[in-house]
Image (cartoon, rainbow, N blue to C red):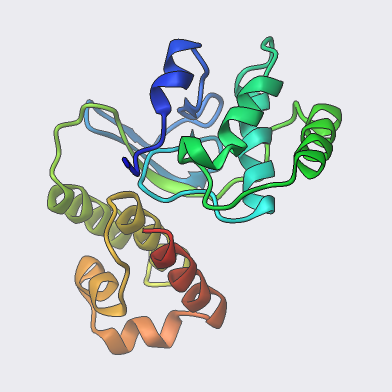
Length: 202
C-alpha cells in the first residue's frame, strides 16, 4: 500500500495549503528564493515534506492553518479527510467524537494567523535548485546576516528537515562552516529535543 498522502484530493477541491508572506517584505527577492533578514512568520507550507501529523495538537494546528488560508470555504469534510488515517496525512486513528470536538473548536477560534515558526530563507516553487544548492544558500545567507546563535541553528534545522534529510550536529556545522564544538556551545536542550522530534517525522 502506498505511503504517500492523498494530496490530489485536496488539489481537486482547490484547497489552499501553502502561502508566501503577504505583509512582510523580503530583504532579498529573486527567482530562486526570498530572504528575510529579520525573519517572517507568514510562510505557511503544509504537506511539503514526507513528515506526517503525529499528535492531536499538530492536527489541530494544521486545521487552523487551513481555516486561515481558506476563509470562504466550508472545511469540515476536509478536516475529516485529513484526520482519516487511510488518507496518509496522520499516523494515528482518532475517535469520531474527539475529532468532531476538535473541528468544532477550530471553527470557533479559527480565522487569525495561527502560531508559526519564524523563517528567514524561503525557496520558491520550481526553483530547480538541488538539495545541496539550497543548503549552501542557507549557510551563506545566515552566516552573512548574523553570528552563530540559536536562531541561525534553528533555520538550518528547518531547511534540512524541509529537504527530507536527517538533522545532525555535524550537518548543521558543515552548513554554517563552523566546528561541531561551536554548535554545541550555542544549541539549547530545547533545540536538541526539536532535532529528535523533526528526525522522527522523516
